[in-house]
Image (cartoon, rainbow, N blue to C red; front, side, top):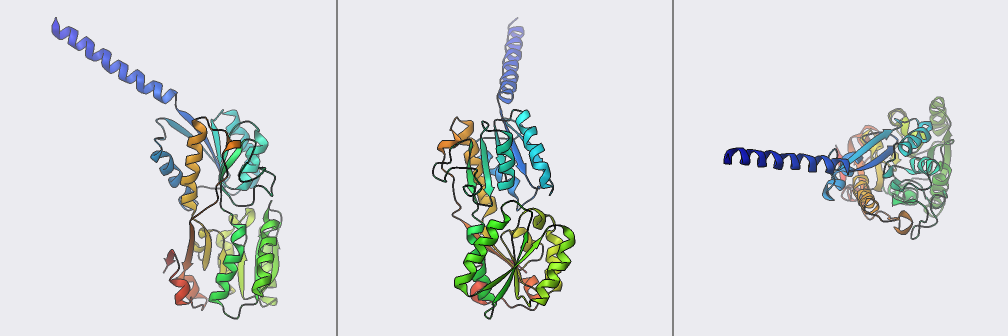
Length: 325
């Protein structure tokens, strides 16, 4: 009799645990994740890591609806609307174009910028960094603000530098603002910038011919839209033309470019997770100041530099956070 009671009690206890675990899952949060493509500098892993440190385990107490355009920017509005229909608790938008698409899909659902690569104030997404207002907050990479630093690094590795090409997507939202930032930064450095705008993949060969005709000495790329989608092709053309390529995204250097200087992308992703946490706990996006990066990363591809006959000065190499040999 006692054994029967014990077994019954044990069964009841186990049932309670199962129901409790099921309830925990059912009460879990759902986060939408909207990004151009997966695998950008381990961004997704860093986001998961950030959530884990805050007590969120994917598949247990949080579900993440991953949505990637895979380089097709025209899919952003459709994917953003899909996340809204799925009634996620908030949307993590990677890049300003993803943020803009999400903002058009909803004015009430919280949106966390997970690396706005253009000025969100200039794009009309928030009122100010300190008081964003509305339903959008998060972290920004201020990649356009770093244009001057990248040009300074170019001058250090090419002492007689005077002519630099700016490769950019002429149809890409916000890309023109990045070009203007680069032009403003070039003047005090005594550099002349030549715009190399492209509208489709067929333009790349033409702009590199124009670069050769203008005897450009280096190339800086504005990593948006079309430029991002054709990273490998651009790097190959730059290598053939023996043009040092500098970018705002380490992916270009990992693909064979010479140098990148930008905010630490994994760190931004971990910081974005803290915004998601605050919002899930009831914080209002309008009341959460937008955070700017404090950690930056200089990546140099020494192998690529040697391939085009470029010597990286020891003082520049010593400052690199990562060197690809």
